[in-house]
Length: 150
Image 1 (spheres, rainbow, N blue to C red):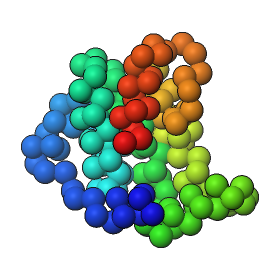
Image 2 (cartoon, one colour):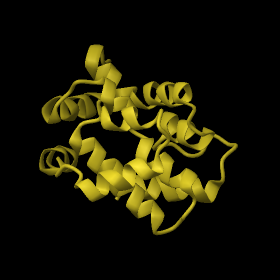
Image 3 (cartoon, helix red, strand yellow):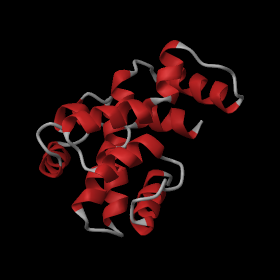
Image 4 (cartoon, one colour):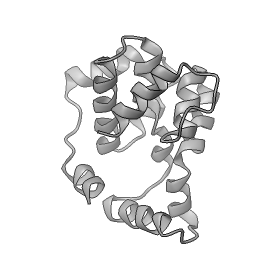
């Protein structure tokens, strides 16, 4: 329910927030960010703001902004996303757009790799909300996880 209402109530980024996002992302990453729904853009921006309270590292801020870009490939509204989340929690096999929504992390990681994103952004997109697979700074990973799940 929290995800549903968060998605439905999300306000689009202001021009100043849009400028902040553009300033943090590389040119090849920007289209991936803007392909997300306004609600996903808001979530990413808020995740970046929370991460910035604990780390000023630009790599962390970029990873926060880009972690859900795979959702930009999936055309599911609030109800569809809620259904996919519940079915996945019940371990019901998912197909089509529902399966793509569940797999948005690996889809986004592939997009980020093609765009030339840094390993932290690619790994976090692929693996969140799981623990660090190794090779990343555990403190930075923890900051990203906590910023994403408030």
